[in-house]
Amino acid sequence: MAIEFTDANFSAEVLKSDKPVLVDFWAPWCGPCKMIGPIVEKLSTDLSGQVRIGKLNVDDNPATAQEYGVMSIPTLLLFKGGKVVGTTMGFQSEPKLRDFILTAGAKQAT
Image (cartoon, rainbow, N blue to C red; front, side, top):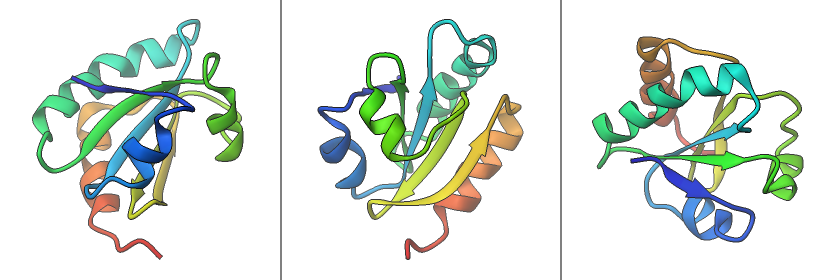
């Protein structure tokens, strides 16, 4: 199950994680966000143990979205070692999103 990230827990849950973390920046009114939501949930189960996957509601947590320059949703950022190592925007199919996570997650944080 995907983790719910907030402005309050972002540092502890994402930046200080010992595993790569995928953050889905979304909002309940966003059509493409609703389409990618089940894919994010499935991958959070399929890839548990390798990657932490969660969602951050931009309406409820605007500070974090603003800090990372999220201007359109869905935006998915992959963090490793507290740094962004990959970014993808818009709807992605499950194979494309899985490949993005595994490819970007293998990169070293700079």
